[in-house]
Length: 550
Image (cartoon, rainbow, N blue to C red; front, side, top):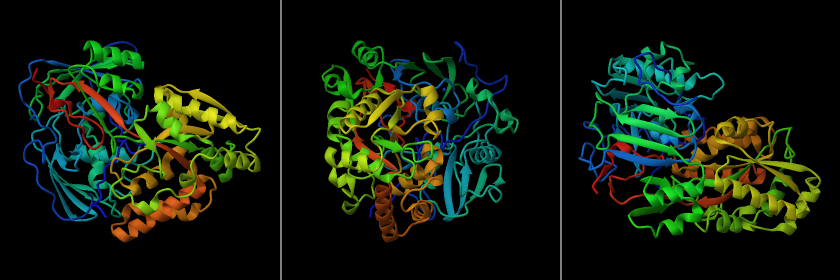
């Protein structure tokens, strides 16, 4: 089996560290009314900005232009990274806040606020911190800030713990620039999960884990600081003086919120934006435009589109796996690939991405995934399960592809005599509703685990989606499924992992907690005059390493 990569991303707010607000000396915002694992000894030490460079253009190079314009599609109205997770502006705020290390697309550790990670044991890490680092307000960064940030990660009111097996009582500072992290058990994702663990200033927060001023006054150690923010309009960042690393070649970053696909395409055509995600229906056209490079790919950066069922007592799917299977069999997924994704994807063959590094042939095409589109069998199951005559509410996050997917599912269900209503939500309300199991029956969402492991998929989505409803309500094999989902992250034996994956896959499909629809591809267009373009394994980008060569 391939060596397991592991990093955690985009599980909405589930695995994100909350940050804290600034003080009067923090950079101000302006605008309107305000969004390998393993314990395998010593990892390569840092000494410069990066352990391994993820870009072909080194930081600190000369740029012939001083501004970069980036199109973003969603803004949740806050600059707090804890509530921006899964939305475009999170990638922008990665330039304001920094983790201890990042991970490039090949799984190499890129040291940032740390310079070395030594795994004394699989459950005991020594993290050496970079000296001479200051936050934007001038406060020095040290071990106390790391301990405070970890406390905040696991003690947010109303939020799950970011690092459940991190033992905060035993984790301590060995000196001002060395932290000993102690874990109750091994977790195969944690060496890379920390790429999302942003570090915050304890002094600025005043020890208040629930500090709210971060929404408007961020204070990070990153190469940029916020110069202007207008909700649902734009976010401007400027390279800051006093940054510990090389100063970015591009001085100003302008992130423009563009909710309409046509606006994005027009901006690419006219050069108003230099980087933008390309809507699926426009990929082929944008590939013909001069002076643009379009990268189309899949894998960790391309989550699968999935349909989640709500198993709570408020839903028509409560204790009714046959009703859930009826819906799955009624969906023409090839039509979704062709219409919603313009062919840039493939029909899913298992409940998680086929691009995971540890997928085996024996996991695929099990159960309904092997049967595929079967409206005759779907109608029979809908009748026997009592689904006929019920009204189903489908929600989506308002993204154009998600809306089309929801409407196609609605049409498929109508063909078997099932009535479904679609509610297109806005980014501001999506997370609060999708995690509330009293408000809908099905949700068009995603499965994603940038670690590219089945372990992370099953652990995360079984435990946390639909507000943890899968942990509270009945489904076939629930006790065994939860037992495996909560132990798989600590497994290191390849054969044990493989057998556990097989059993989890079968249990999930028999219970039909969610139905994977499409393994998506992703397209990003950028100006061909940019050098240093390179995505991280998380799907984000280090804009500080870009420069204009033309």
